[in-house]
Length: 130
Image: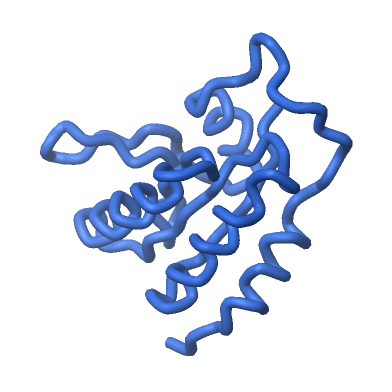
């Protein structure tokens, strides 16, 4: 597979993120599981697929095992390792979906994840949290 440069990966992540004015973390914001359930139809994915060892992959599509996590540190880094494991176990391409609440504050984490994902030839998705 061809490696995509991290600058292009960041551009893809930006273009996939519908930005609205975020004013911080509102009380009662959605959980990771709620975000997975909300986003599953968009990605045509099954939510929380249980693996043989009791772990659960957040979103599983026909071709990808997607780990969904918050962008802030250290969650973005943990998501990469989990996605790799789920991809190997399920025989699918690993991918990471980062949830952001304030892209201006969290862009450095998105950038870090994009650099590593590009190096590992992993797809990175970025979505705004509700």
